[in-house]
Amino acid sequence: MERLSNENVKRLPGDVTVPGDRPQTSGILHIGAGAFHRAHQAVYTDDTDWGITVAAPNSRGVIDALAEQDGLYSVATLGPEGVSMRVVGSIVDTLHIASERERALDLLAADTTHVVTLTVTEKAYTDPGGVPGLLAEGIARRAARGGPPLTVLCCDNLPDNGKTTRAAVEPLFDDRTRAWAHANVAFPSSMVDRIVPASTPATYERAFLELGVQDRAAVEAEPFSQWVIEDDFAGPRPDWDATFTNDVAGWERLKLRTLNGVHSTLAYLGALAGAETIGDTLALPGAEDFARWLIAEQIAPSFTPPDGQDTIAYGESVLERFANPGIRHRCIQIAMDGSQKLPQRLFATVADLADAGVDRDLIALPLAAWTRFCAGTADTDAELPLDDPLKDVLRQSLAAAGSNPAARIDAILGIRQIVPEHVADDHQLRRAAAKWLRELDRHGVATTLEHL
Ligand SMILES: NC(=O)c1ccc[n+]([C@@H]2O[C@H](COP(=O)([O-])OP(=O)(O)OC[C@H]3O[C@@H](n4cnc5c(N)ncnc54)[C@H](O)[C@@H]3O)[C@@H](O)[C@H]2O)c1
Ligand SMILES: O=P(O)(O)OC[C@@H](O)[C@@H](O)[C@H](O)[C@H](O)CO
Image (tube, rainbow, N blue to C red; front, side, top):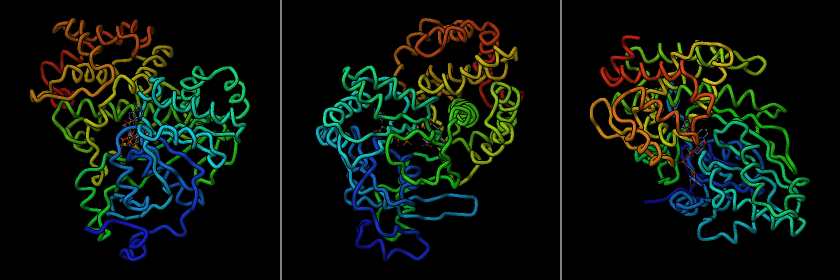
């Protein structure tokens, strides 16, 4: 079957948006060839004259598909009014880090590379032997050559993600590189937002129907897209149609606590209840009211939003986006790596509520749901996968706690790699979470939500 290519892109159906003149070189090296990059940063870059080399740390699937399609792929935007298709042309080269490490290091050191963007998931920043080690070695090579300044831009869902990236990389520098990097490498923070579910066979089938040729790197996404970037670039800055600001932290907090906090909450509740997607979970009786209540009573009072933003109104728009029938974002996908996500999505909110003297009863429900999820059995008795770098610690802690709800909550709160001490010592949270866990054990998620 014919594949999307430079040769056939100009012959696609007239309602498909196609790239104009494509860049010849890449000033951007992107690490993490996942779905999100293709539907977010690569789309913003497609509207500029910059090009991207996209690097896959391990799995070759996406970059091989891109290479076979001259770097071209499609984004299906799925809105309430239907589908619109765009072919993106900003990816001009691909790289497989596991088998081409020298090339990756040379690119990090190259005069032509000005910006490195990252979407490697939250856990990647805790592994010095992985992406942080690669960045440190590449920057050392750049420093030794006396190369031009470099900007490393994290696009993962982490708080202070620029500082987090710097903190993962800097300790790996030798003294000479550290001094050079201090003057020549910037790590701006950014808040990234667009719901991009993992591609499925239906994604590729839709791409074929809409394009008339096969696209094995197709992605699908919601219409909404946002990118707020700290305006701290060491060298040239692509003219992305993003918001450049000096204060990203407020935007990150608003998004991580509201959108991502409610996303994770619905993912654990939905997975336990046997709902496949976030949309299906929201449709459970009582679920949308609970989400709205959580935003108003717990998330909004935990922080001050950026100027001009209202957390409750923002939360309403998030719930509308979650209900988009075109987007089938699976609970199990969002539920993965909870140990890496809940500190910024849930525990930071809990800590600020306690400091402000606000009751933590409602926010204890997602903690109870995660605790029950980690044990691996849904309300229907179906097995639930626990895909988490701390899976063994979570499972062993729960097994040692036995069946008592209070002991299980204490076991989870006692894992210091995940839960900060002051949250673990929050007796009101512990009592409320144990009460919710008892409810979930006895009645399941559906009944618990219905009778809130
Ligand atoms: N999908 C979304 O809706 C969305 C929205 C905003 C932000 N994000 C951010 O983007 C990240 C990736 O999302 P995605 O949808 O592209 O996921 P994905 O599963 O399609 O891709 C994940 C990417 O991360 C890489 N990766 C995974 N573990 C790694 C590790 N330990 N070291 C190095 N690389 C690793 C994989 O190689 C892959 O390229 C998320 O974790 C999140 O931080 C995603
Ligand atoms: O991508 P993750 O795994 O960090 O989190 C799952 C979702 O909460 C997330 O991808 C949202 O869809 C996204 O943050 C919306 O911008």
